[in-house]
Every structure is written in structure tokens, then in C-alpha cells.
Length: 289
Image (spheres, rainbow, N blue to C red):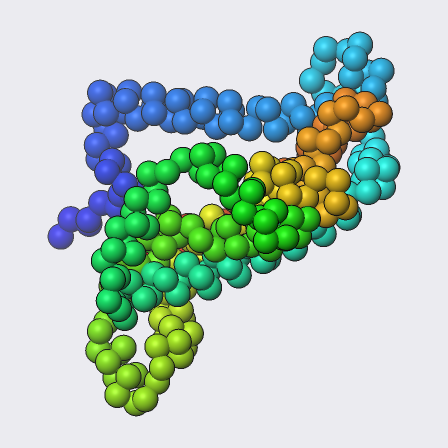
């Protein structure tokens, strides 16, 4: 009995024996390599340039530095007092993640399983919210933040990401796939809707929760406009706001490049650490959602 050929994706090892298929495959591989290089080239340039001193950076056009001055990173870290802004950004990220999962998850669960009176109207408004560009709501949002006295605090950052129409849709669509028998059995046992959400729905929705956490971490860490409007000159600036403030400072270009490395490092490190889990939960959410 002939052994079944192994293959990955849509191209089998047998298909690669055909000249036209192999040529197309090689072109796709070459294109992919070029795309990867173009994607990481700016990061490599920033990293190598940040290892130079200011004289070499200005006068030399080579990519690789003549001397690898890793100690300059510690010096720049201390001079720019980046530990404070890292702390502020982590506070913003942690609060945003908790708000994104809790508030958007609760609304998504209510629209999916509880379905109170008017839920269709609320769902329609959430869908309409996807059509509104985020920048158009910045001015009224900023005015309301000042009116209620929340300017200069992290609360607006946390609550704004906790009212995200996209996250609500993700949760709602995922909760639709949960078995109704589990929810009904829990209600028969006397469980409240809040308890069912906390003890049943969320544990069974780890895939979509991880997806929302990934989106929330990236959005909170890279957000600039709202943190700049409400945290500027308060001592609570995030790394993105502080990086923007360096443009008119006494620090030279190489120090700014090192600051850029500090800003980019956490998301990159987290991705490499959790890339396997990220891929798995993304695939699971696509299948279950």
C-alpha cells in the first residue's frame, strides 16, 4: 500500500515536482523574504544607530557601529528617567486590559445570552459605533473628561477602552457559540447572571479573552493622542507621550533613538515569549467564533 504523502498547506511535496508550481512557490518565498526584510530593516537601523555616539552618528554613513556601546543604553535610561514612564504605561495597560475584558465582556454577554428588552436597539447602536471614526469623538470626549474632573488621571484611558464597540462584537459573537444548556442548567441551580458570566462564560472563552487582551495591550501601549491630552505635564505621562516631548528637549538624536528602542522593546519581547499561545488562541477564536 502506497504511503500517503505528507503536505502542509495547499501545496504538496508531489506538486513541487512540477516546474510551474515550483517556480511560483519560489517566487512566493522570495517575495516573503523581501517583505520580512523590509519590515525589520527600520528596526535594525534604529538598533545599530542607537549603539553609536553622536559624532559617529552624524559623520559616518555606515550601518554597523564601529564600537558597540551597550553601556549607553543604561546611561540613557537613567538620564531620561524612563522607569517612571514605564510604570505609568504599565498602569495604563493593566487598567485598560481589566476594563476591556470586564465591561465589553459584560455587554457582549448580555446581548448574547440575557437579551433584555431593547437589546436589539443597543446592539444596533454598537454596530453603528463601528462606523464612527475614533478621531471625531476626541473633542467631545476631552470636554466631558474635563467637566467630570477626570483630567490628569488614568481613569479616562481605562474607561475609554472599556467601551469599545469592536471588543463588544467579538465577545457577543463568541458567546453566541456557547451551549445554551450550560447557561440554563446554571440558572436552574439558582446562579445569577453575573455569577454565570464570571464562573462559566469567561472560563469557557479563554480564546477570545486572550485575543481582546492582545488588542487592548497593543492599543493602550501605543496610544498617544488621548494620553497626551489628559496626562501632559502631570508627571503621569506614558512612554509614548514622553517620547513626543523629547522632540524639543536638550537630548541628542542618538539618545532619542535609544528611547525609541525602549518604547518598542516590551511589545516585541512579549510577542516572542507568547507567540505560540497567541497563534493558538487566535486560531481557536477563529474556529469557535
